Length: 419
Image (cartoon, rainbow, N blue to C red):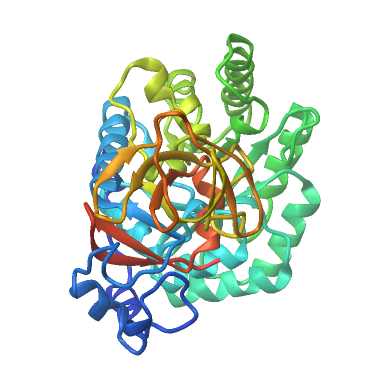
């Protein structure tokens, strides 16, 4: 990756102040005896996750898996010659944004004004908003940010002349333009133009608007295909070729970018966009999962070094009402279930020993309970802890304001989220 991708600058003071926040009842899972301590003080104690007063259920981040995933994605992007602006909506954790930028990310992607304000509060200077911005109040705030910080660069999508008109009106008088990417959609899909004529009209409107600059073409292939079947992969390729061909028709500037690439098909983006200035927006790679992305990740499919699941949901057995049934203190308020149920891995027993949850599976979630059907080789008693792997990272982080980072069983840091 070129030196332009090494955007490591964030607001160190804002990140440091996260450690000054006081622990109290707002943060579920935190030790009761840590009330009144700062986050930094609790992290410095290096408490044991199981004996240090933490209350299950508790979702934690594995430090070594995080580092592995950050390094693996950085190295892959460098080999393929593509830039990365990971989607921050996955974690909404500025501390993790900083880690991604330190590992070579070109910028950070967000989905809306609220997420953009979080990124800016912590000093992220290059941001893609992967949507068309049509709220005048939010756009006026953007104009103020451009005036306040001369190093702030904003990219956003556009898929209508009306949207361009709204942006131009609200940004009139801004000290420099917002970079606009014409978004290509697909029939029955979500946002994005549906035909070349509309794309050309949008591009003309951007070129003629004060406060805007035509900067490229963007899309999201993950919205049109699910799974790694030959048919899905072929659909993705066709869409990406259309996006590439559209870029060739729009008389783009020399520094224009082509942006696509969620966490499922970023290899195809790199293949089809080969030779173009490509910006991927993959976000879920940083934690990976034990379900949706594990089964579809291109690194796993291609035989490259795979990502490792970094999210672990620890819960206690609260009831054993039937011989093969254990109820866990883990529910829909704690862990994802939109792309599959959590996967049980390990049981930690009262004496500290561990055994695999062989043949066991979570069959259902209530708001606060998981139904764990025990395999014949699994022993789990009331009070035991069970490690479950979430099936989809993007809908885990929003359920937790503070997540411990663990090295083995030791809590070495705490990550704050903002949803």
